[in-house]
Image (cartoon, rainbow, N blue to C red; front, side):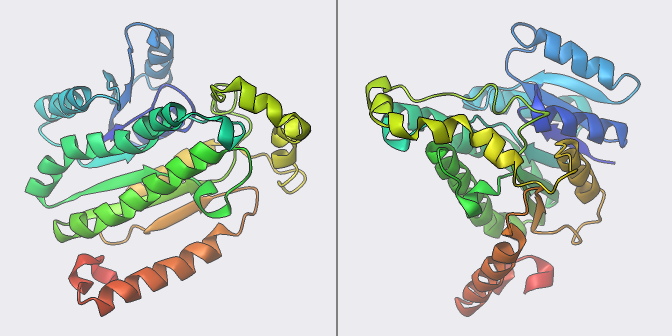
Length: 294
């Protein structure tokens, strides 16, 4: 079993993933902001859900390099090693793209993109020294299908995905595997939509009033994508993360899609991955690819 650090574990997929991994026998460090303060009830609930299993709630604010460094050092001091980092922390913004200020977008990128970079900078020195480990990124199908009214979020998840891919070339050299899990939309079972942010510029938002009806029915429109009778349960993502991390080194997929909306992302991923790998081989950098793709 592995020692796993997962970010954004207070709610949603992060919380579900932490529970599933702990119950599967892993040593889990479920991280969140302020677990002794504003997230105290969520932290206690997480501990209660995993009573009898090896789960630890740990402070980690992905917007702080010091916080990321401290969290990783705590894991190493307490366990002697770290095997897996699950990059899950993210925030959602919903609204008209023009109405988001540059500061709105920069804040979102700071959480959704730079947060992963900070945690990687804290964890990779240890993983490189061991020449083993897994970086698992919880991405999004939105980086492929690009739905409306989620502009800054889609842009941030696309950047997050690209950062994961480029980092993987360098990580591969040190025996560190990379997996990108791509959840589709989940309108229930997480706090992603209920806690989503809105654009700061209300004056610009008002100028798009004729589109308000589309935004108002966005969740219902998303629900309509699911096959009748299908319940889109985010637990499926936690289960898939657990399944992947149980696979032996060298057997983990580069990507996995968990999408009840039938977005067709798998086909796009397959074509893109083949083209990327062929391009890298033509550059003469095949040794930067996973061993089974060289």
